[in-house]
Image 1 (tube, rainbow over the protein chains, first blue to last red):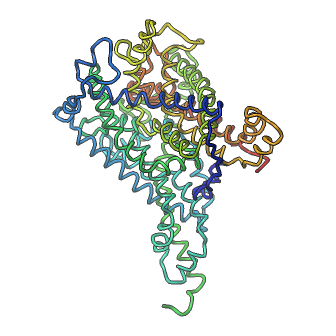
Image 2 (cartoon, chains in turn red, purple):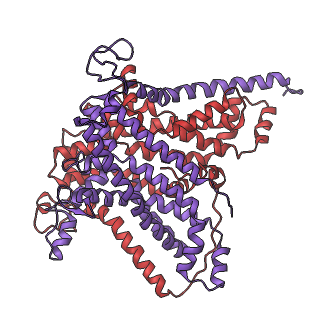
Image 3 (cartoon, rainbow over the protein chains, first blue to last red):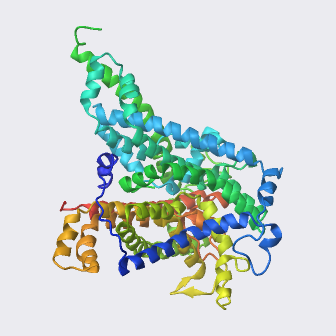
Amino acid sequence: MAILDRTSTLLKEAPAQQRRSRARLSAGQVIIYIILIVGILYTLLPFLWMLGTSFKSSTEIVRMPPTLIPEKFTLSSYRTIFTDPSVPLARFYLNSIIVTFSIVAMVLFTSSLAGFVFAKYTFFGKNLWFTLILATMMIPFQVIMIPLYLVLVKLGITDSLLGLIVPGATSAFGIFLMRQFIESIPSELIDAARIDGASEFGIYWQVILPQMGAALATLGIFQFMGTWNDYLWPLIVITTTEKRTLPIMLTWYNSQHGSRFDLTMAASVLVILPIVVIYFFFQRWIVRGIALTGFK
Amino acid sequence: MATTLPRKGSLFRRQHIFAGTTVTPVMIYMMLFTLLPMLWGVLITFFRYSPTRAGGPFLGLGGGNPFVGIENYLDLFSNSPNGVLFRLSLKNTLIFSLVYVPLNLVVTLPLAVFIESVTQRAKSFFRTIYFLPTVTSAVAVSLVWGVIYNPTFGLLNLGLRALGLTGYAWLTDPQTTVLGIPLPMICVLITYLWSDMGYNLVIFMAGLQGIPDVYREAALVDGANAWQRFWYITLPLLRSTLTFVMVMTMLSAWQVFVLFFVLTNRGGPSNLTRVLVLHIYETAFRYQEMGLAATVAMVLFLIIMITTLLQLRLLRKDWEY
């Protein structure tokens, strides 16, 4: 929590670090570089192995001794996945996209709105509500997943994308993060807008939101990664093949084709590709967000 | 444009109405999906509850799902199959988290210090690559590492055979242990470290950047070598970051599910990697004994609460720079 309090100030640009540049490398630095490069190998090797295997032919995979880099690059495993009628890959992608984008949009809206009100208004029960938010942040999902499933049963939305989306529309962490950020926006701006005749919602929409690019980007990317990669909740809620999301499709595919490493790896590449692309575009936000909040 | 301000009372009223109409629905909605399940979860720990049996009118409790008092809690200590599996899962979870936290810190803290010491451009390159696994879906991670650990076609045994060694059945060998830890558990530890170390690396790097250069420069002037500067200056000043990272890592280690579900195929071999979260999932959704499973979930909650409160206490710091 103490770290969280620094959030709002740290969300702004970190001061540029002054670094002494040295032309020559000392012996110590050479060792450091060697260690770092060994670490890079540990980090990258599984990705390369995944990519390599996905481009191997089905005969090359089972050949002894195994090859690290495919001797002959082939797209046959990708072709097999795309044309397999029992694997509606486009459907799985669509499901993941629907669920992720709905949740991200709703979390951004509810968190920024509630965060705004908590930061800039006084109202009855404010402290009680906020304490409840902090309390729910401490409840891990695994602890409430059973009764949460029972809530969905009561609502009649198990085995549907709705069942994945509905419980995720609000985020205690999101409200907390937004409140921290909005508190640093001067109240004079709000008062000025009010004198100019803006409605309260108008203030939120036209004064507060445009200032929150950094905070919204950070929260949005975290939520995106969390929902896109989520496995446990879809595993519980979804039973019909057509309603599966990508991570569920992966394990299902693996159990169907347990010995076909080429197919499993190609499917894995297809699932992680979107998130890796997003990571390379937005990594500044992700890395900064983690450094600020310490949350995943 | 109005020339006079609205009356004070009406202005505040308008604000009050706005606050009430926006926050109340959001809060009620959120409580419906967090606090209500929490209470419901506590309630069903006192029942032998399964949604497959016909129960009473109120939440399906009663009837086929009878009230059993604290029997579910006593069951955790009994010799019933659930009790035995629970204690085994608790033990495995403890082993996993207690080994993982120091393992993670021993790797990520020096790496963060090393990365901080290289040039700006190299630094962002290393950070980008090291963080890459953390954005990768845990299922994909499990599948890739499953292939790496494969005894016949896997990368690991391929390497060992090239060195003239025989290799292991990494994920399915119930006998081999390293320092008393079963080999499959070691595999999960290595894979989890791979997928998770980017987080702590980034947090440590931020913590290191937060330490003003003057302290280390003063030590440098006083003739301290690199190790002394790290041990006597950096490490003590990093204490709050270190505590935070330790607790967060511990909390996340308690909640790992996918690796134990996919990589070691539901806690195998012979339940050597069965952990609490997996035990909760299997009991609730495979065997549909939700009363028992909710009871285990409460134990998990208790442990996590204690860890969190401990963190709040440890993080109180009485100094500032």
